[in-house]
Length: 147
Picture (cartoon, helix red, strand yellow):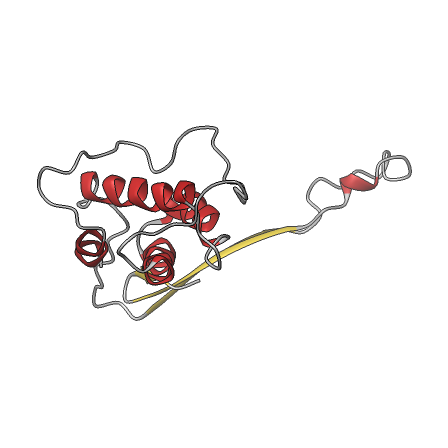
């Protein structure tokens, strides 16, 4: 998938790579005065591929991919620049991400709960936060987390 994205953007071995998935402190805007993007690649298609990557193996690109996805209907130059930045980041970090390696185990389920463990009879009248229950769980199939 990463190779498809890089190919779509026209990257090659001399492409300048990036160490961060997004410019720190930059939030995309509609950019009404900016020219419309006239790139040779399909913006929506690349956003779909980036969303797929972010949901499966690359959660580190989630923020930048979602920022760029907000402007699919009318992408401007600044939006295309973010997609190119993400492509350069993926080029630099192509060996990273979540790697799932199934094993022979079937289902594994881990759960933990604390049913109002911080409840205190003396302070319950004045502090409603003392009666909170907490729950956490993970379900794995073949050694890979599914929920």
